[in-house]
Image 1 (cartoon, one colour):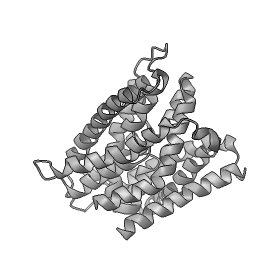
Image 2: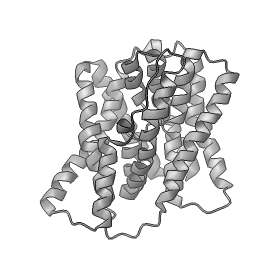
Image 3: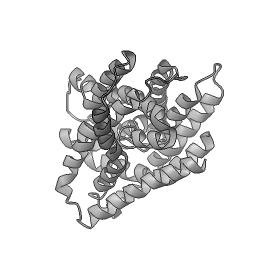
Length: 308
């Protein structure tokens, strides 16, 4: 448990360092999208690829189908639970899409991958990368529909955006190398390792930098956002833990832990970019990302220690 708490604590300290240097202007806000692209399009795909080929020669005990089915169930369970609570809490129509998106989709890209690597090693990150494939499909289909809900926008689902992105490509290429047992030359392996090692720290810095663009006081004006944070960070993972404990079949332990970590993470930060793109509820999306990320510093270690 101390290993989990220490790993989570270190990564979240880096988030606050990113927040501080963003507020102080040490890193200019105009450069945040570039750093985000560097992580999403270069270092994180390399890290995912390395985590997959690292399984060469190892006997994996994790049935891969369980992570796909499990994360699909988690998303469906989360959105249905939140829909009921949104109606009971009388959330304004323009905010409902943000609430459903926030509680259905967690940040298992930027934060989940480095956390899984730190806590569960390369195989844990490998399973998190597989779950991220499902999440990406939902972000660019159901996610866009939710964030444009109650707005006069008719957006067609882009199958290209759903399937074609650098992380999914890295998963496919990694599986090719893994299944065909293709060796990676030492010099290439060292180069990829250098790039891969950048990901954890830089991705957490980018999260902190992104949060630094929000005015701290304005974030807490909508008191109902605390309820959203409680659903995303406590209700969803705790109910998932309860469900997993009463399953009529045995689930692989690492898969189970990755599912719980996915459920415990704050909301996906991609919603801020989507609402900016479609000119919908950017303020609610920014608040949801900020508040859930802020409180996850305490809740993620708590949930993982309960789970383990």
